[in-house]
Image 1 (cartoon, rainbow over the protein chains, first blue to last red):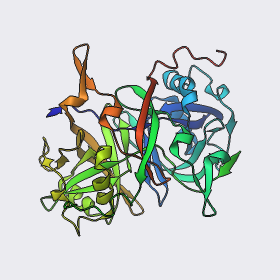
Image 2 (image 1 turned 30 degrees about the vertical axis):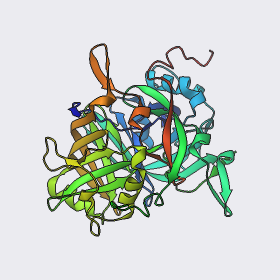
Image 3 (image 1 turned 120 degrees about the vertical axis):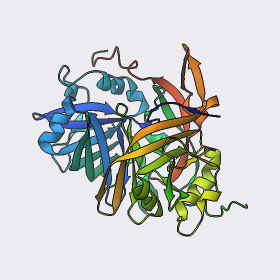
Length: 192
Length: 192
């Protein structure tokens, strides 16, 4: 039986990322689950961050941000970056930082995948500020790429070992592979 | 070593959902990974769908849509709904359908969680059309709620058994619980 659960945005699984921005020239990182894919071509992503958050100042300053994917062994520092504000704590000291093409979007070396984004649209709904970003460049640790038919492709997600979240307030690991996109349904029909 | 991987929006994990809309009064469903959480209060979500997709017609018609979370035993039909268009196939026959408060956002009974959304903002970037939705009501199968301290809360994600995706074009299951939000980092400091 279906139960009405209220106006709860129960999206799952939720990716946990560290959003990076330079605030007054200094790197800051905010833990977010309000992140997602908006399209592959053009390559669009977004983050949504409360208007009073410190990171927002830096994003508006440079019109750039980064998305960094921590691994499960970074759980404590990742959770910590969602508890404390850059106004109170210098989070630039928590990680090894590098820059890419944009020069103003700080990225975290310890994270196996980093995406640098140029803000192409910004809007607010009540106290949420949403930054749609076009991907300028994605960086991946070499050991997480595998060569298939002479092409470097992304390793299995278990190797990237992301921190996953849900609105039950628990963190999760990724599980096993169960299929391939645009293949599992090829022979499907209701009468099968 | 970091390798520049191109302008690839490598967000992971990607939730796989069936977006529902009534097109000319008839339910249609589109498989999407371009979905995400934009905020809890107000309860905001979004989907992004190619402008030429059949589902978009219904969303624009009613200014409503639904988000339905299939389980892994629905992998074949879910993948199928991402391969074929509602222009060619009547997808309303694939599922048991119910409606909630909005009356125009068809939801799938077989999915353990369903969210009905009112479009509060719509915009396009090139051929992508993005529909930001305010959650009007969320429905959950009773067996996926557990009572904790007299409050009904969401079950562990392994019970909801979502289909997860990544840009390696593989589908995944969820893994085990590894922690609790806003707790794992409480005692963290760089000197620990």
